[in-house]
Length: 155
Image (tube, rainbow, N blue to C red; front, top):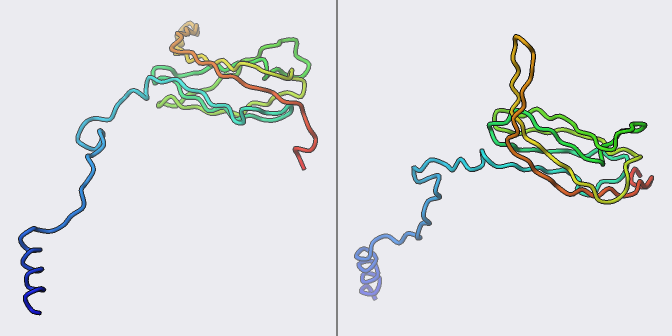
């Protein structure tokens, strides 16, 4: 009886400790510098994607780090009483190229499909003459569908 536990203990000592296999480290953890490809990407998110008339949408934008401003425009953003069918809103960007803003969808916005266009620009201003120069860095477009206003959405 004593030989069976003794044999098991000797076998365990000879084989060494049992450890689970470890996964290979991720590319950023192995000492490699993290990828900087996110700095050159352009993306835009409008929430909700199918707003109703008289709603407020949240715009989240990411531009390349070379840009310091974004122009976002659509026919869905038109104002009440305005003769302009297309409205652009400006969006300041952080050092990482991120920006956010809320924009109202007018009650008078036409129903149906609209396109939201974003242009990332680098704006430089000559302090002496106060003339601004804009250089387009990237562009992005996103579909948006405006639905009919319903009073029941507030109850």
